[in-house]
Length: 287
Length: 276
Image 1 (cartoon, rainbow over the protein chains, first blue to last red):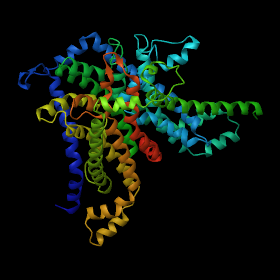
Image 2: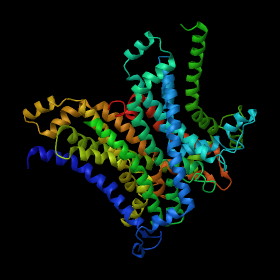
Image 3: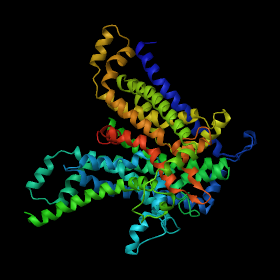
């Protein structure tokens, strides 16, 4: 074997083997399990082959279709909201000012906290009776039952946006800082106002950055589990039961592993659809 | 030209906006610390602004739920994951950057793709396989599953950093009789210190904070600090001062690390997006 080939094999193989073992094998096994009826606590040999029955049964259930639908809403909602918040914050931060490093540091806070703890913090802050959010809103007559039926979905959206906007702000800020200054100077000379500069120069120049950030955020939002698990547990009832939580309910609560694997399969396909879009875009950038 | 008044107004609006940004992110953190220092009874009274701070919450959190033991699990898992991912990922990135072999793009896309599998989708097979091989509820199974994300992330990051370092010195060392890998380790690796460090911070942070895998795959022995959240739900609801003390303790190591190496953190978060 040529020495170059040997080096490639030696350096590449360990990582490839590990990924095959911890990602590829489980994915195949996940699909296999989703084609069977298998309950937790029974011997593995007791499984029965069902074909695509699990999937058919899932989509026949109104509760599952509801979970699917709110997962899509959640993914788009969080992505859009965090984009608006992130872009606004980045535009504010994109200038020299005195405590800049302190404010930029504060943006990092959400990404350093474990999802479960984020859920815990907001469960305290959003509590109807003793939550600090209602404490501040009460004088304005706006206190609300944040984790109740009507607002629970809004609440997981808000909290996830708090988390996601951190990433979006930092990405947009990095994007803004890398923009060339000439077009802006020329626009000022030509008398363009702030809004014109934003819509005709900043936004078009920032577009490639935003595109990748949006797709990354879409996929990341489908991964959100811990925040919702602790904040609402998917409730009240089914109200915030996104697909990631449905996997937990099917798998560890009811012990129906075949069904849980099928839900996970649907979630994976959803994520795959979005990431294929991302990767095809990325690939063009590679050439 | 704008009137001085409009200019003044815009200036004030921007300053207020910046204060808003700061409060938006820091207030929840402030509330965690604030609540954790309250006596248990006052933890249910957001309006109690004056009180004698007590460390009772921290004493409760540390003594009640095996917190030190869970923290040790988190630390071991995070350190081992970071080390393995850093070594294997950097080697793979080296092959991807320095050698234009066939299928190179395919291998890269493969690594990239593995990042986008939702953890919750892998959790059911991981659970079944782990119990089959007798490694359920161990630190080992956590390290293995954490490698999905950390290893692919390392390949992605280090590939970028390696592309920024020329191969000249390495080639010269090979001509002088050094082996390929020897030249890489001795010449190129020291030049990548910053990148390696930035990546390591990220890997550690991910492993320390990871939630779904730890929740599904461990029950008692290998429980991590991040998934101790459940333990604070008592029969009479959550003991909030203790719960917030736990929350603060669990985020403290990573928060300090993140603020110390802020530049690297931001670089890691935005990497590959603003460059390509």
